[in-house]
Length: 198
Length: 85
Image 1 (cartoon, one colour):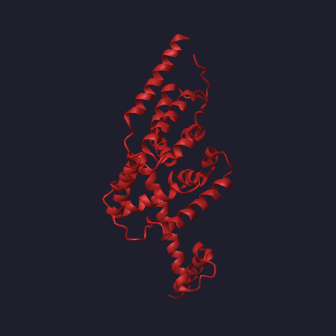
Image 2 (image 1 turned 45 degrees about the vertical axis):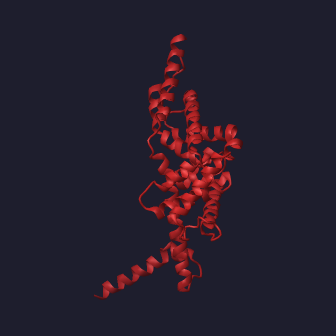
Image 3 (image 1 turned 30 degrees about the vertical axis):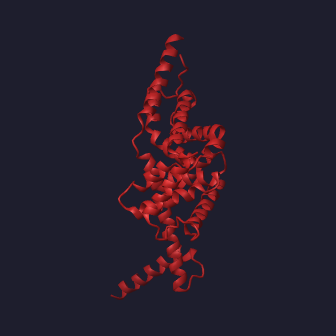
């Protein structure tokens, strides 16, 4: 029998709470990997690691932040080098394009996703946790293992870089340019062909 | 009448003093500067919404069954481990 203390959740409770945060694990993982299939692999592995370590989780503390820490550590320790070199998943790009009826909005979202991909890792993860995931600075700092002030400055620098990238007219995905949806699709098909021919 | 007008003036005066926009936009005297500040703020807000959309887009996807299968398997495995103890 495993030791049960006041601060431990029962297996059934832990399982239920863990299952409830899978959507967040997938979203955070996707922001790290930028490739849907690989991101789900990382999210699954993190979920199983969290399950195995469940006796170390203290009930009443933030399970999402705890799991994000596991996911992040797992990603950086095991997968980073090989996975970051993966090309942008064409399916992700296409899914973004068809996500809503408003084509121009979709293209802008794709532009943000691409620009996000160009940020340094530490800035991107800070911005994703705080700006996209709505996590408090303190929790984001805990997950990334740095001071709150560091997270704040990373978020601020990330926002500035992102805005600069999106407003740079030399970037083809500049949201202000009148880029046609068909051109984006062609670009995606080119990428897909490149991947297929590798 | 007079009292009302006086109060209205006081209110506007106070609002100006407290407004963070007025305080933060130092020396933005020209209408162009003010518009640029407004545009920058609007762009920042839009970017914030776009970032949230990107995250939400994935979080709102249906979770693939594989996740629940794996979690069930892990749960079953730990139950049979306990039974063996």
